Length: 93
Length: 389
Image (cartoon, rainbow over all chains, first blue to last red; front, side):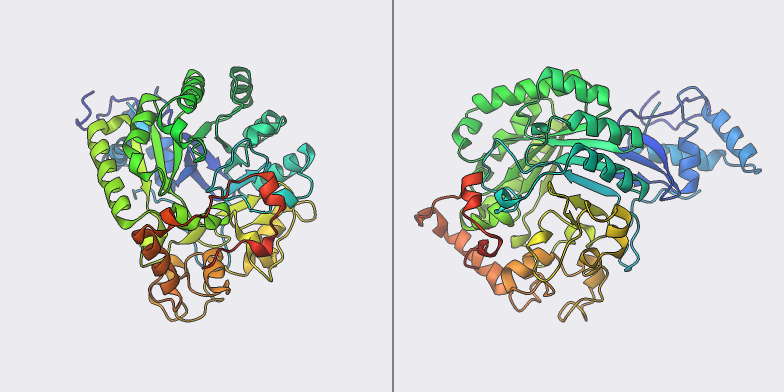
């Protein structure tokens, strides 16, 4: 995929090897860990990233989220977040 | 959906968890760096914590919410239980960092550390000034770093290099950056020396001039352009040349918890120098109680302790009055404003130190650099640490 192209629903993002995603009980949050640093994710970001396993497509991640949170119309928001995540190098496509 | 937010430090007295645990395993070190932040009286330190003590500290800190764990020193590789501690930290879910000079990082130890789950190694240039020529001529130091860097890469660790910058090496910053690139580092921290402990003893010899700093920043930017994505370079400016203080440790007792080799728990590496404040020891109290309930950690939390000019300052939340150790070293009062701030009545002390650096006086004063070492350390007591400020 072109680096600057918009992320499509068929893309299969995974959390980059530069980061470790884990649930932190004390913070009640998902965090991304990297050398000597940490990004605390809000609930939405955490729920998206924990589903980015390099196997599921963006479309499947969206469907799963919509089911889990009993809602619809999340695709644009999910893709917007993944664009940001790619820019931060949190995910590989 | 909202964008994720980075960690926001809290200023309220009720702090979040001690996210960063720095385990200073030992003050022993094969190097003699003139800018070392270990206490100058480190040789008076009583027994080091045992393996069992450290394992308990790791468990308690993790339970209290610590997530980043740095193994530091001294040279942490001098502890032969390092692998045991890393393995336990990894098992507990810490992100584990080793801060080392690389001396002693053999292939077999690297493999053992990898197997134990070590996530990251920060390799420092062992520029101890004694070896400055050697360092700059890429000979022995380069050979060692090359070997260690290859070992780090072979094991798939991200490579972060750190070099403390000061008057005597700042003009060679281009060579330092080139060396880091040659060694394959992904990140390079060019950290200007901060003036505590051994660096404070040597401050007049180490403080660069403004011109030197400006040139170094220019050269760093040129190198950033040249190398692009190959390496990320962080340049940490020295606070003596600023007009507002740094938000030291991101707030006292806010994020960082340091445990020293003898088990003393501190809000920063150098806080033990502060008078009238007893710091708790992990041999006697558990980490959660140390973090939330001890006088040592509560004294300078938030802004209730401040005096003027900090108390009425509109920027007080921004820097929380700067560094307590620097305030104490330069004014004798740990609750004073950090004299780096131009609102501090003692700001002239910083200005004068910088002015001496501008005039290059230290270069002609016949005052030898004080090299960090156990013999020098034994001659010193905590009360005799201050140069003529």
